[in-house]
Image (cartoon, rainbow, N blue to C red; front, top):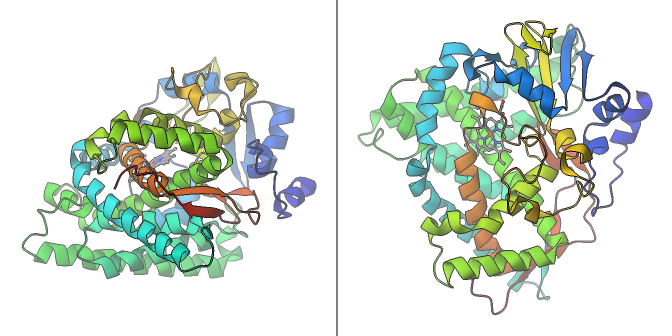
Length: 460
Ligand code: HEM
């Protein structure tokens, strides 16, 4: 075990044309899978976990369990409390049904339209800044830490989506504190599941609690101000929508705002970041996407009604989140005994589904599994995966990701605008080292060489 941990924490990087990342991202599971197969039990301190990287087993296990009957591992709940509270991804049972009914319509395509306009505004602002930055240098191109840029953009977008545009200062503070919280909760030296672990990382625990309370009081002040103002309920943003529905309590509103804020910015930012890396490595796909923009938008303004017609963008997104899933695992806890092929998964068992392993399994995808081939999604939304539960980047069943539509819209808008204005290649400084901190991220950022496009009109 020491050997595995040393090789994974040595800071060494992979060849960046290699997308065979499972052994880097989850070195223990990679090793144990070799000796125990795709389904086995492991222990996190005193907690038993069922590891699953078997699509057939996953299907049988999940087929008889409704969304409301799934649990989320209690062992993670204490740690994640400051970040998500009792938000949608943590809540269970009838409360989950009530929360899900309140939130689903807020993120439905009909309600997303006004959000699209502000995505265009924020992205255009970022790209204007890039252009000015490059023009101020002596060369026609410039190196940029693109992961940082896209994360900031996505944070700005989710802040506006969550709280509207009137309380920008408060929203920015919420964003900064949630990021600091994430670092303190998922950085090294956490001892989840180990008895008395809270005492072993007391300093981090207290810091996280303090940050969590600060975020709560910022959001509460936004809620109270909105309730006092005349138009507080009539706005299109997420909070306005939920206030209008009046089905959630003040405390529940805070937790849902935190959940959507955190769930909404990082996953999408990472999907776009990994896409920029893969497009930088595959300039022919940059060209194919530009051709599609030209064909669909016809050199005019970005027409938001035509986003669904950008088919190749859809294939590229699916291929990127297959190779580099923003959510690298899905977690559940059995609240009742579950029977699979005559074997009982006892009530209380934690379940850890390895999305990275399944997405990189040649048995499911074929020998070209580690190659970037968006065309595999051309004829089949499942990318030719030979089992329908082998590709679950947004989860499965009733608890499937509630932010899928929002993510696809933001992904297409941001990339259409970026590709219309810039071309990019990988900087020699880039070191390929994907790592998990709840989500799957490039541990050394993503420096790219960015160059303004001459003569391509794309969209304005
Ligand atoms: C590339 C983008 C995204 C990916 C890969 C992703 C992935 C996932 C996954 C794997 C789950 C767990 C599902 C399960 O347990 O079966 C999930 C749940 C969830 N996601 Fe996403 N997500 C993305 C974007 C978003 C966005 C943009 C939002 C919010 C605006 C969001 C909010 C949520 C919430 C609230 C849940 C909990 C749903 C529930 O338990 O009912 N996600 N997501």
